[in-house]
Image 1: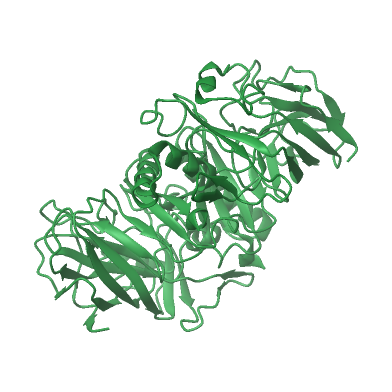
Image 2 (image 1 turned 90 degrees about the vertical axis):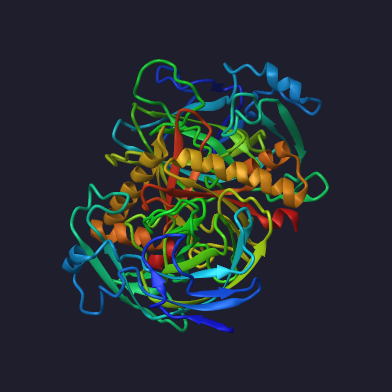
Length: 310
Length: 310
């Protein structure tokens, strides 16, 4: 590992006019220090009220950008996740206005985690739940071709805030390149996340991330694609799942109904408060599309791992 | 197993005025003979052209209805999948006008399968692909309250043509009941299916299905929910996945882009024709929602199991 980028070597939006923090050749690796998504606004003594003073201009800081020597528009960047070293502290919050059920959860809520960064053993939530952990970077992307500053929040065809939890150690992610040097940055590291990141946050946690970069000339990729080195849900699936569904013509509404149904189910069956159930879905549930062809109705399933209550 | 329903004891649409084929008490089980989704129209000598003469009035026949003694509107029916005995023969088709990429695949295509019904070992597709099998009924539902005949194709809040592949042996499915006696039917048995059933068909295969029925009084369920007895993807996930994504504001378009991307990927990397790749996605890939909160863009991933080419 020849190179290190520190967390102050970063930025808050995507902008292809930013000065690169470092230049590397294809085949090289970098260790990135990544700040938590609150940019250090939250800490061990924070309360839910502190979410109300989050500055959206500085959320989700990323470390970079990295100029990849020889990268040109139309090429693709292969990013291999080599290693993650988590901090052992994290937070999950319900930020008013953010999350798939923002209308049903208007009040701020905050859960602080102290987890086993070395062993990454399941992290306790209350008396009865234990959340399996698996670290990954939520934001992994390159600069878009379009000039100007672009919000860090939405992902794009060039990646960015993908929040895809399967970008864990061993995964090779391929990103379309739109500007010279690619201008890669990484941030928003998570100690665990469910598919969808439904309440809007995961186990948000500073960590360091080691990545290797390779170039595919003229790949002309349209969207990010990736390859995992092994199974993706075995830390969760051992005991099976409780599954709630939404059935109807709109996939977003189906997803909302499935999450809402799981919040009700976990309240009824496990005695969880609605906000706790919602946050737990966000840190460990799977979200799958059951069928998407039997018009006019489709099915989305929220899969909650039974091992959490084992 | 006290009761058997034969495949002629069935119907083609949901209609709460149908005469029950049988009445059982809660706690009882039935073995259902289920016809394939073509209602016997396709057989060992069929070609793609035979898909053009499929009669949509008789597709997806179901066996039933079963009157559950004591079931009333507002109750829920728990259906436990006890056992499936597959026939060993099946088909996968691209039916013009049907499927998530119907616009890109206008021509009929048909693949016939002879699979190992006893061992359910992976079924060969061409020289290089082997599809892991796991049987389940695609259509599992009860009659809707609304009078008249309703198409069997779309699933509804009361279940029906759910095409959710995790309704395999050991899964307990809970369905909302809207009419007296529930009027349960089952059909559309599959030897294997991917999430989404993206080309519109799975490995369509006649089989017998043993189900147990229980009643929960006053459950007031809104949508189907289920509980699996164990992991759901371990027959597929051992070697990891190739994953393509769609990123954007519309989940359906994201899913289309992810499937389209996988068709391209499998062509480029594995030499599959586009129609073969599309049909393979339909019989074995997972479809997951990566993130659904980073407005305005969301991510759908098509997960193709690497074990297929192992």
